[in-house]
Amino acid sequence: MRVLLTGHQGYLGTLASPMLAAAGHEVTGLDSGLYADCILGDLEQPDPPALAVDLRDVTVEQLEGFDAVIHLAALSNDPLGSLAPEHTYDINHHASTRLARLAKEAGVGRFVYASTCSVYGASGTADVLDEEAPMKPVTPYAESKVRVESDLVDLASDEFVPVSMRNATAFGFSPRLRADIVLNNLVGHAVLSGRILVMSDGTPWRPLCHGRDIVAAAIAAMEAPAEVVRARAFNVGRTDNNVQVRDIAEAVKVAVPEAELIVTGETGGDPRSYRVDFSRIEKELPEFRAAWSVADGAAELLREYRARGLTQETFDRRFTRLAVLHARQEAGTLDATLRPV
Ligand SMILES: NC(=O)c1ccc[n+]([C@@H]2O[C@H](COP(=O)([O-])OP(=O)(O)OC[C@H]3O[C@@H](n4cnc5c(N)ncnc54)[C@H](O)[C@@H]3O)[C@@H](O)[C@H]2O)c1
Picture 1 (cartoon, rainbow, N blue to C red):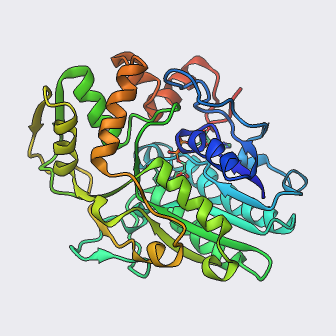
Picture 2 (cartoon, helix red, strand yellow; picture 1 turned 90 degrees about the vertical axis):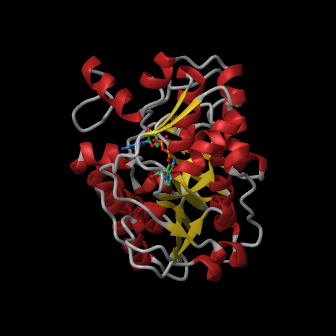
């Protein structure tokens, strides 16, 4: 298929381009390059050819000729969204829905949307949540994902097949690293400071999924029969990667045994706690299997951090989304609306 991959210069997009190419698809990227230079070591493959355009400015003509869009571009985490809620709604909601509408108009058949398990938010229940569970977003980021999912259901037709992938929190190595997701963060601190610091009592539940598995799920959804995925949502992850934060910290301790594990016991300001049911994707997209455990991911991260020479400076400044955007705005290379200048 001819695939437009938005966000191809992000953490997941950098994994997705080579995986799509290996699956026989022809990839064109679209990214405003917020983190284009935020690479640890070398890229495994050069970036694909791309439309150099902000998501907010894409035109219907630019979308003609594609068979599918995999839409990853976004302001991509909860704290980032809370800092700049108006840009989060602008990019993550309005520009995403507009992209889908224009893709439909251009005759693109498939639209795979990167949503998030954060839509379940403060679930207030110990039950395991399937796709029919109520959505209780607690941040502008998660709210924007809920709104796009709903818009996509309205846009679905015989010819236009949107699907929402509710991805668990990612982990694992990508050359365009992210340090601000829990496992990547804890392994980084363990390696750099010798401490595994859990700033809570460690009890909140988090579903985790390796970045490569998230990409594999998107590819499986793009290739699946239209009637299986049209206007539907799929939780993306695996059941035994529903873990409590203290389990994640313990997996890091196994990978980096010399590091000291400290659980502060605070009840933090983050109300998110949820366990997620992954049986729909297991049954209905049988091509997909989430391969990576949290322990395997911790070992991979340790290996890559050491081999590629991670430092405290790069960890804090180059691979933490919020810090990168602040620094670029201060340097004048990004305007107040997060457009490169
Ligand atoms: N990483 C996770 O834990 C996770 C979990 C669930 C869902 N997701 C979703 O998956 C997607 C990809 O996540 P990621 O971790 O790779 O994020 P990322 O921040 O690493 O990458 C996002 C990319 O989008 C681009 N982008 C942002 N605004 C843009 C705009 N206006 N125009 C063009 N490009 C723009 C950025 O430059 C960046 O390259 C996001 O939609 C995110 O919400 C991620």
